[in-house]
Amino acid sequence: MLECKVSQELQRFADKKIRPASGSQSAACVAEISALLQLIQGCFPVPASRVIQGGSYVKGTDTQGCSEIDIVLLSEAFASVNHRKKPLREGLETLRENLKRTSHGNRILMGKRTPLSLRFNFLCTESLHCHSFEIMAYYDVLGPTPSTDLKLHLYRKLYLCNDSDEAQLCALALLPYQVDFVKASVMRVKELIRLMIHWFKTSFANTTKENKFRRLPSSYTVELLTIYIWERAEKPLFFSLVQGMRAVLKLLVRYAEIDVVWHRHYHPKFPIFVKVNQKHTR
Image (cartoon, rainbow, N blue to C red; front, side, top):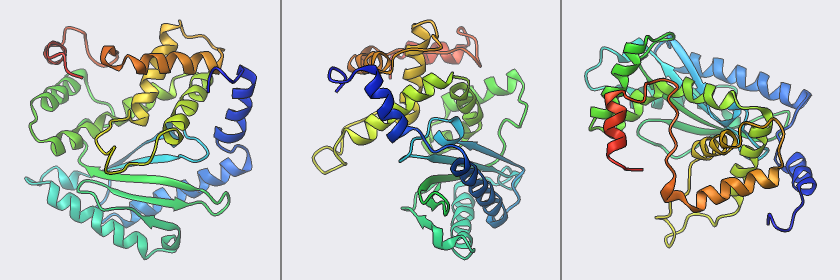
């Protein structure tokens, strides 16, 4: 594909087929999603002290056919519960039923039930396309302005945690840092990220019995690897999408050699990080 296309052709394709709508159409989406977020908070059975948002839509890496929005409802009601999974599941199930009964219910297509999250697609009336939502809930482990010691305590807790579900819930507190890291990239990097995500979404066969054990990178992994390639090239403001895509693909081919670390929120000699690094696992 890359050998056949010059940079201008790939740019025109990205502008026409991948870049999300702008102008009035984009403004309509923002208004719809803002209203739905208020509705979600109102339908949740316990008051949320804070709401965290993530996903490609929030980070600015969404495409025309793939817009993901992650919502984390943080409530102190779950902090005092010894076995949190059951009340969390019940809270999300109540939210599911409440949303179906609202005026937006006919535009919400509920997804398959999962133990820790509520998933659904929401149809925007103005632009007639869907946004993919995933909603999770927990208590506010870090708070809005955590100290360094509090963050280090969370890293230790995640390292020592033997319950994968509990670790996933605790890690929700790190979502704002993931969002900020990707949002800080220049617009050209986000264009390349969109192109890579589109390639992953459209260039592989759907999951079948024969290929169910394959492991393709997640969208977030693709975002991080694209940013890493950009940083290795000394962060140019402008670059060829063809060259950028080729560089990311060449990195993915050597996936067993990938070892990328950023030390934005902990020191390289932080004991837990040193232990993780010594394991040499991916």
